[in-house]
Image (cartoon, rainbow, N blue to C red; front, side):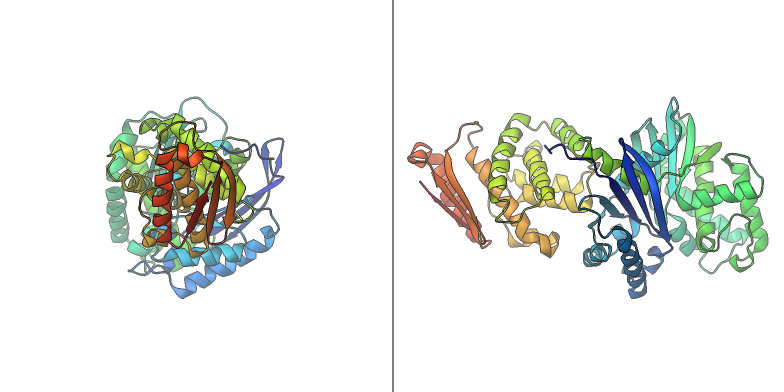
Length: 500
């Protein structure tokens, strides 16, 4: 749907991880990414979660202070050129929306929370662009602070994605909380990690891959320790992991641990990360693993670059979903054409943004997805499907917006439906819902031809439609539908006016 946009000169990516926050800044030349700057701070956001999944005040303050510093570097970047995402901890944290809003203000750019599979997809994208291309499939692993991503892919295309509920921070807090590095602690960690791996073990054991690669802090640190101890010249092996574990057991406690290649900032979470890595080697029968410089943030850069070059993953996802649920693409195009016309007329008066046009397009493309379940209340079925589907390329916020628009595109709009959307966006979302409702109403006959609208005027409290003379008399079904629509919209304090 989107217009060909000009490739930006600079891009930045920010990864709000459970252990550390990262930012990379890159220059774009001839479609290639050249990293100019890297920033990293150990925020330990995941360690700030209590048993009720509430973020502590101290963790929030550390995060906001870090993002304010990051923001100084990218404050003047144009909208859309900074991709910032939150991962496991922000997925898990209760009432995280308000914190994400404050975090976005501190950074100066919007921050989205992404799902585990989307995180895995972006990790694979970053790793596959950082390593030399090779024949066959590649296994990629990323150990984060709160989750571990396992991906099987070929070239730049991920084929199988899994996100596991364990990471270096969560495992360290669960088993090695007091710095205990005894054999008993390692036995507990091994059991916990293997239990998480059990549901995916058989698939990855049977999958045929040519090589394995690891990304992010834990695996990079382990790779540095392996090199410093001269345990293996190029790769991480299971024997090298066993040797590091034995040295940690001999130390007995984190305070006494002294390993070459281990930085002080990584020390508090290295035991948990090593336990996850070692269990994965054992469970999936990995022989060797190379270390990748690319990870989630590099994946974000390539994803954002792709969008500017008309290679938007989200558009591919929309087309795939349409095919899977047998959605009429012809009718979707008809709806989107009329919705886009209404949008362009209202754009200036309602101060609508390009991302609003994208959201309206996605919802228009999938507004009939619920018909795969039942005609009765299909807008509710559609919203449920969009709430719970894995949609590559989409953040939680984008998925929520789509779900709300599909839920609100017909029948009565319950006031509570908009509560899942940030307060600052609710008025805009209601207006987008009105545009989608009108487009579906005008094409209820599922024909291109509809009553001719002579003028559209957007007002702060509503919308006025002036039809060509005699048009509503020639389309009595549309007249009745408009009358009913005006009643529906009155319930959410939106005034629909129409005349001919």
